Image (cartoon, rainbow, N blue to C red; front, side, top):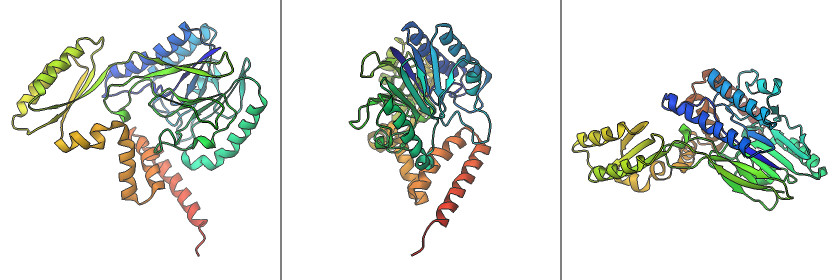
Length: 384
């Protein structure tokens, strides 16, 4: 038996106000679904952040509906949980529930286990770090149920695990139930596969299916997992998707012409116009040089950006040389300004994503909830 584990599809995400980039996300998702059908998987797990916003566009809704319909037509069941992008803080029914009610897919984010043949599958929707304490008894309950089951047991979560990413982690691996044979994770956008000795099987993040704005411009691979559970051990294989190339190139004023020549040669080998970023060092004595080189790239790229950076930035900046560390740097700065790790976590992990999507009402609700939590904590403090 084989199943597909797909996460962070972010259907409806539009980068650079570009219809092509919106369609890139749909193309990657359709690839994952069509590959699953071609490979005759038994079922598909969608591990949260199905849509990019809680109120997705009609096009995004139709893309998902058509994909789920193709799965049903091929007798492939699908199961889903909700990520933070799927859940509105303003009370409303999440859009993915429509597919559950129509019988296109099955919602499993309430912690109640279901069975696919002899496979136990249990899932929980996204829980914020502040809710971790209330999460413990529910995880303990599902662990006890999994322990009694003799077949494979799959846990589906949309959470950050601290050992994988300490800044995006809401739980430690030791907080997870011990008796599952596969941990189908969502939330982190880089694919990761870990094996912890205290867990009953591999813990896997497929990563997002396409680059999103939080990841910057970089050359990377995206995909999903297919997991073979025909034996006692769960065996995941990562399947690479064919996505649009994004390139971030370091150059200098003196070498930009030669570097652009080499870049153009590489671009000619690609099937789709890439997104390109030039990071340029050196004295800006003749700005026209840069403009003329960027103009050469304009016709053969989907988007071409450039930025002038100092030599120090080029050799040591967290933002330039280590794009995966951006979250760490933001967290450090927020903590320095706010004077509190907890407030920094709230600002970066909860409030900033809402503000960046223009969700004013949900942002206000988040601030109110956080303030109420602060007041509750202050009341419980014992003054000695």
